[in-house]
Length: 90
Image 1 (cartoon, rainbow, N blue to C red):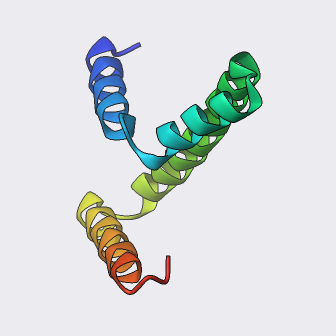
Image 2: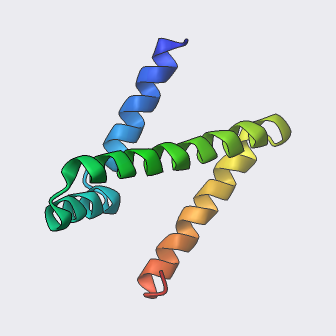
């Protein structure tokens, strides 16, 4: 295992997820249901599944497309989501 890649990935994802809507939703669900362990297990599984999907797609795309194209597509996706949020469509 490449520990440098592991720690960089962990730190990036940890900081990106800190205080986002997913964390706030989990906090609200835990408070509402009063079942924090169940909410933790479900949210951890959901994040693992989404991460696995992202890694699988990224790994496959990395074999066929140049990294620059992938970065540009990601940037366009973020811009599109931002515009949709500003227009109250997302």
